[in-house]
View 1: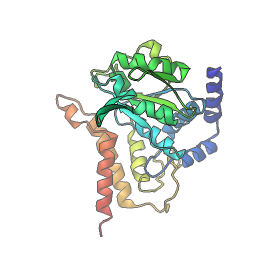
View 2 (view 1 turned 90 degrees about the vertical axis):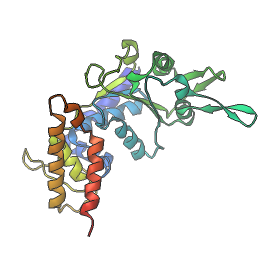
View 3 (view 1 turned 60 degrees about the vertical axis):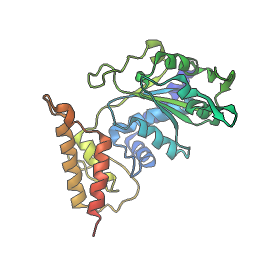
View 4 (view 1 turned 30 degrees about the vertical axis):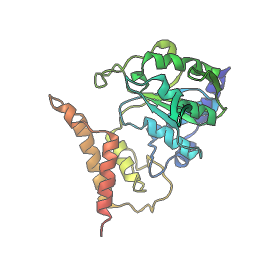
Length: 288
């Protein structure tokens, strides 16, 4: 039943013509989170999963927009920022569920991020899921199986999720040597998710994203002058310095990340670093 609902929801958002997809991108994009058309289908798939309440696993390279997409979609829906746990090898079930903390002369139960999200009916993100301890994954299984409830061992309460609660997880590919320490998710757990795969940005994607963050529409350089990113606003006039800077930064990003040799790992930069540098450069360009 759930699979049929999911298929129907995905068909509704994926099988649309180009014009509808551009309108979808315009509605979802902003100057802070730009959706290139390659990422649009991923955003549509996530939206379909949200409609039917299916848990979603976003997998891809570091800093390629997995977590930020979830935060952005929540904001566009008028929802509060998602609750979140960033997993490490020392993360425990208490970090998800909560624990007793001293208050005066007694101890009072304090909900963790997952418990709060379930009670409030908001979104929850388990970042770096394949770094989590097996005990954490075992704790999550009943929730991901569709029971929509979880037992709090510390206080003996059964928490039932509100209907609007949604569960997201992100991780890097455990088979990629660049992400040592990640564990392959058990098949039984992985099968409970709908997966969305993210790839790294192309140089053209980066150029368009950096340009659009200044609220510009930059023509595609390869196939007839169409615009690959749709963002509301902007004066349409373009800015030569901003456009050139975006192209130079995108090219530098790809060169550094494609470097080989013993010191290549020290040259690696992420999209997050690139955006920080881009924003700083933008501030300098605005100085009279």
